[in-house]
Length: 449
Image 1 (cartoon, helix red, strand yellow):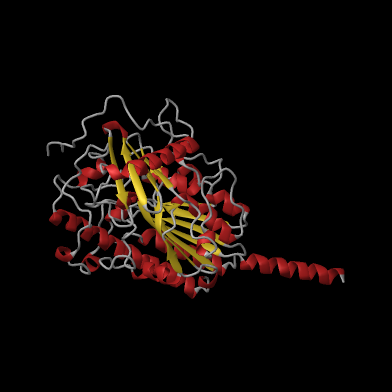
Image 2: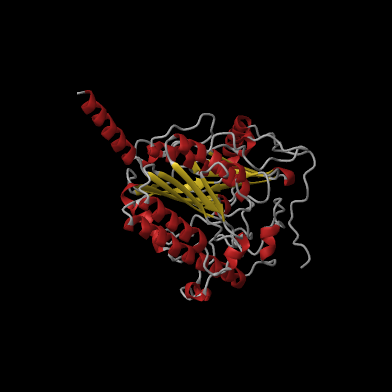
């Protein structure tokens, strides 16, 4: 009888372990939220589209902000730690700390505690290297720049991930896996072989609806590295060239995503693997007269976010969320415990239909020059150093083209949103003043070229 009870307990334990889903987290670099064919027919991404078709998409997922111009660094550190960058202490000398501490809560340690084998492979530049070092398998591209110039973006990471999946299946690894593949694309330089480029007619690629020749104000990021990738003023022809390169790289990367998805199916892993697709932030590419990601506009700070797999319903939601919400959400579906003291909130109640949203507003930031507050309808942007502000009704103007900040009828709304913004600052420990005694000149004058 005792032997039977022990056998029953062992079988039951193995059954529970087998039911834990694998988690495959696919993460792009500089991908606009609309750079997916399912949301933008100008882009060809059939494999990512298939995740949208069977999964759940969030259409208002944001990077919270950045304390340096390389937005991807704080974004990836917030993503992997679930904590806002204001929580990190200053580096020696009082400079901003851009790396979340490895000893704090993070994806790798949380999934290890939940019984998972953890695997990371990605770009090395501007990432969360201390946290990534805590993955059981921690690999980097041989050379970030060379991979982007190879003409086959995504190939190196995809092929090694496929080899890993085949090897662990052959060994009959008992533990489920958490695999984080952090691609270096479609970040510049954007090079794709001709077979991907031929799929697009450059002259017919539509411009962003909020295209401008240049931004009128000095918003504190007009001349950073990304902005120097195209001359001022931006022309439609140049932006179409940039979009041609960008979309071609996305199509190539999508093809390698397809190979990974096909391998999951071949190995029988697709039935028990949750797939997450996202990116560190968006990219302007002509939106608002800008090129990079160093501004709190939606084109730059919104990213795609898709969940697909067992237990994930099909649909999409405009619920407001942060990329740092992915950690507690993934753990929620994996049966793990969300780490204490994180800023992320599980999105599972939205995916399961229990709640329409888990956040009523979002706070956005960029170094010491931009702050914003966004609720389900309205977005207020403040540029403290130049004493400028912008107010957008995102319900009627999702592309942020009509600034309503100077409309007297919006005075009360601006006051309310500013109060909410200050509340967020206090909550996160952001000490930036929203006004200055002597504003700098607001007009942006491009440098001599």
